[in-house]
Image (cartoon, rainbow, N blue to C red; front, side, top):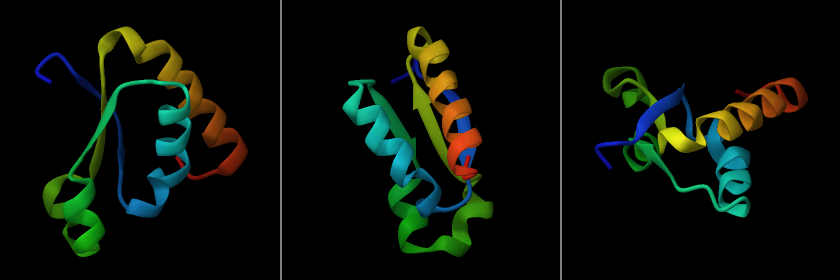
Length: 77
């Protein structure tokens, strides 16, 4: 996991639900750092720096395209 990079940061668990499904369907290996902690205590989001989407650098371009598509279609990212 040391080679994984943070590509996006979210403030609430609800923001990542659709994104998580899309990444899993495309077979992109990813990690949402602090996901469980913030889903249990949403007020801790700021203290822990939000939910960080971490991916392998090789997937950067495709994940950025997914984020851009979700941003323009769902207005959540």
